[in-house]
Image (cartoon, rainbow, N blue to C red; front, side, top):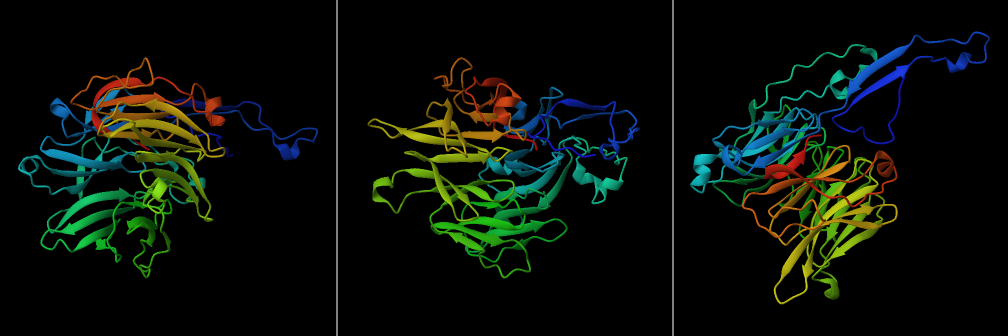
Length: 420
């Protein structure tokens, strides 16, 4: 028996399936149609959980796990680490972190290493059942590693590790590295599971993103974006080059569409604007949004029908001030719905939940639950907010995002990211 959900299953919920009077449809016309024994099964979706880098007290600069399902709060990294960035592995049982020593960091030395840190969660996903899962009636039970156990993934003895990205299957890491003794030796490296790290033979570039096929890299080179194969056996020539796009924010799960930014440098009348485009693998390009400030982030929802965008507009006046806002764009119609407007601030980040039901937003100026604009008071530590996107599942089924009030999670931190 198999079934297909119309929407991603909501996280943090328990479900029950019952078949009390099932019949064989191929024998339904007989006098005595075949019947099945009553069936009942209970299961649960993954925990609704996220991680962030703490800002205050004992949490400062450490990775913290919040499990909303279990109402738990766990410190994952040691006190003597300063966490710079992180990416959860696809199973949610581990997190890839960039960490440097607190003592040397305080002295101005930046030497981050990459570690794999366990979360203590065990998802029991179908991927863990093996290729012959249809023949395995009783999946093996997994034993979760205790939260906070860590393993070194990549050192920084000869090369400084900068930006990194983790593939969707968790098997490949791409890291921007620079030789400590030769700054001209600079570029992306590939760290594949079970293989030694190797440099990617391509021209140096800027920002990058691993494609959903886990085999290609979208790399900013010059005035455009190159698509580079990650396979060591390839000739390392770009698979494609998109000259007019200077940044890629996200790709749909099937790899057919991408959210990309055009900095509009070829048009003198639009030179001080940025445009968010939807670009397909067939070469179709659709402008979704144009702003007088900057496009900060964009993320497709799990159904690939909505695109959430974090951007800024320049406030008219004598001083140059950018005001951030959050919008949801319905891809079929191109209609944009404004969700939140924030007070001008230097740092803001968003993360969409894997079930598509809510956004995490962390910002220096807190939002207020009484309106869709942030409060004017400034806080030294960033605040993390939860923004629900739908009143019910029917609205999600119809891709009808509604404007709802954000909820303070009473958590101080930054770079909050949902676990898959």
